[in-house]
Length: 65
Image 1: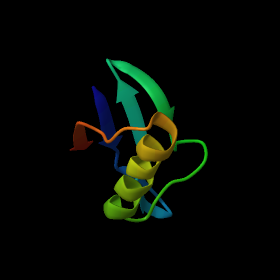
Image 2: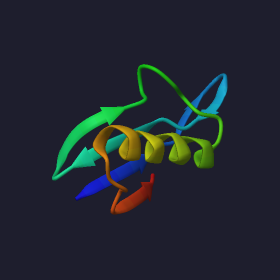
Image 3: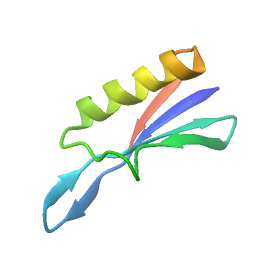
C-alpha cells in the first residue's frame, strides 16, 4: 500500500508542509530536501502527482500530521 504523509513544520519563517511517500512501511520519497510547501493542499497535490507519474499508482491513504 502507498501512503502519503503531509507534515507540518514551524519555523521563524512560518509554517511549511513537506510530504513523504511510504510503500509497505518503507519510505520511497520525500520533499524534505527539495520543497517545503506553504499549503497542505499544495503539498498533497504534488505528492499525489509523484505517485501517479513515478510509482504509476494512486495512494491508498493520506495522513496529515
